[in-house]
Image (cartoon, rainbow, N blue to C red):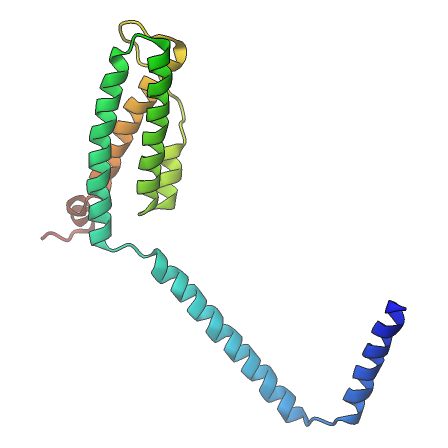
Length: 172
């Protein structure tokens, strides 16, 4: 029954089109207009997406300042990790390190999704050897946060406006 109704509707539409004569120039105008409007809308949609992603030099500077502050917190967190003696302290500390890493990754993502992705990817981590790690994960996380604080230092130096100006030949 549904097929009959659908087929009937299609037949009716074709019969209607046969009885209405639309000049060819109208079809051409509609096609050209449709193509123009589609391109126009696509261009402005892409432009809006681009404008939303553009980061101003002031925003970069604010983010770099925040990253420097987060690096300072990371160094303090690493130093705290070097003094831990109990398993429950280490477990809590590792959670703090993970939270800190998420904050750093989000902050980096404000200026570059690619840099944030690189920051979040650990290649090879050398566990830091110190007095007596509580467990292997303890030494591993001290190594991770040590490398992360170094990555932040390098990123801030590389993206600092004064360094970018030197590379581009523009001096203030």
